[in-house]
Image 1: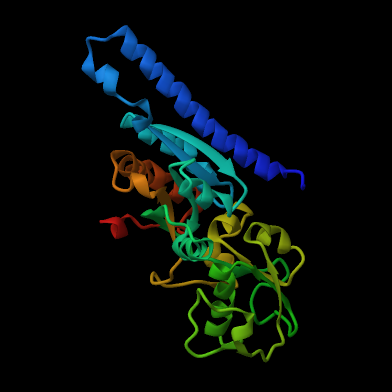
Image 2 (image 1 turned 120 degrees about the vertical axis):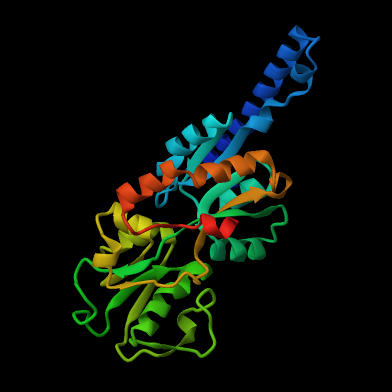
Amino acid sequence: MKKPTILTAMLIIAALTFLLAACSKTETASTNAAAQPDTKAAATANPEDKVIHHVMSDAGFNGEIVKILKAELAKDGYTLDYVIVNDIIQPNKIVNDGQADTNSFQHEAYFDQFVKDQGLKNISRAFYTTFTPSGLYSKKYKSFKEVPDGALFGIPVDPANNGRALFMLRDLGLLKLKDGVDVIHATLKDITDNPHKYKFKEVDQLMLQRTLDDVDVGFLFAGTAVQIGYKPKQDALALETGKDLPYKGIVAVNNKLLGTPKVKALQKAYESQAIKDFYKEKYGDAIETLESLNK
């Protein structure tokens, strides 16, 4: 039997923390109800209705806004019970299994593909959050005019993101792709003409930043690019454009909580002016909020 990894252990602990917190708060409610039997509301209230168990990724800016979310939710009487993980597989499974209420780490294209591949039935998109155009960056070259033939590109290995770099290269006229293929299904196999003989290194999206040191040009999400000092609209060799791209950030929720007051409160927190101000101050124009799509 394989020994559990540190990540697995962390996720188990996180799940247990959620469950223990729920039990602890339920016991407290029972004690209070017993002490005040003449108050019907105290006997029937469930403290868990005011606690949101939320899983966030440490990638990009998800974990950076947690203090703002907590403060905004507190204004409406809610407590954000959160865990930050460095994993893109378990968060959807944890929410699907009911060990957490919601998660925030992914765009809609990844979510749709993951749910389909894993056969998840109990998780849905709750609301949209942001759109951040990804780009192609280089520590060696300032423009594609300088990038030599045979250059090595670092791109995401997961199906939902694999084609994003290829589409940027196609739109620049640097390679050709099979007619009719869409961005969320495009892979290296769909390249029909590669006149510059570019080579590609597919890596886990959490390794893209590190891979940038080992390749000529690398794909980066906007949040990651800003964190390491890039200004996307100025420094990217190529940058995604267009609001119709299927890479809108989302919060996912266990189906039992769809439309509930706690999820509406979380959405309100994500759409707050405090969150917008944070994005503007730290990321400039690299992040676009999407509350208009939730109406």
